[in-house]
Image (cartoon, rainbow, N blue to C red; front, side, top):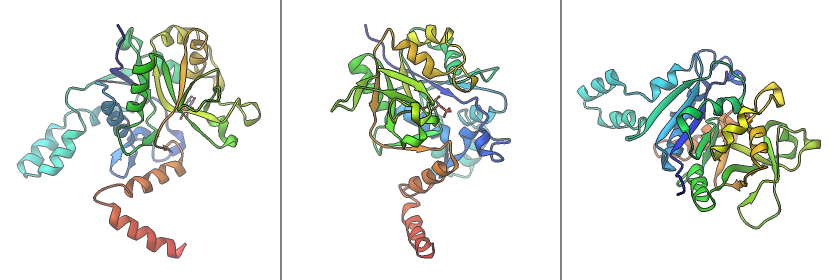
Length: 293
Ligand code: G1P
């Protein structure tokens, strides 16, 4: 019988040095886009995809993430006493009902592949999702991961979320090669981590969305250090390709690279323009600003 995707892994152990000094004492996943931390967007996307077990691969100094997904008794009592029902709802919504949160410490930062392999004892023999919170995807609807779960359910193959990037930027991504097709998905022929533009097999880049079969865990056990001296998930997937079909899926929606300062700013502006409370005033402000620049 086919198994459903019910678990998601959120690798959040990285140091976030690109955002120093903001990330000196705060996890980069807690940086906010408009009014929510990046990690909350990712968890909401997983919930919208029917996932009910959120597994965080964390490190020291990431306790704020654990607190964020815990019940905040003092705040709740205070807001209840003051009858602030709307705020209370916002607060309670951070912890969706019937969702479990699991935290696993990654003692050593050995790379994304290693981080994912730390989830093996919790995942066991099931397909699972991986979401990198600094890639935010807004599709105005069910979300990128829900699209990918639908494809997984149909094909029963691993699925990677991909999009075309500027060919000059291949060195920042896992890059895949697929046969030409009119479909939104295609089987991956080659995957390589962060190739220089001259060596890249295409400009089709993996963004931080994966659905993987549990066969990846055996592969990761034998994956040596790759690009940047790290155990790369991409290299484990390259090994998986020898045994199984892995699909590249060009998702619907806009991806914001919130791992870069510019992408993070763009996400804040565009999400503010979608925010029910802010969009009118903010777009009026931007129009005025535009006259000055
Ligand atoms: C990671 C992956 C890379 C992927 C990217 C997406 O790289 O290793 O394959 O394309 O996420 O954001 P990182 O950005 O963590 O260096």
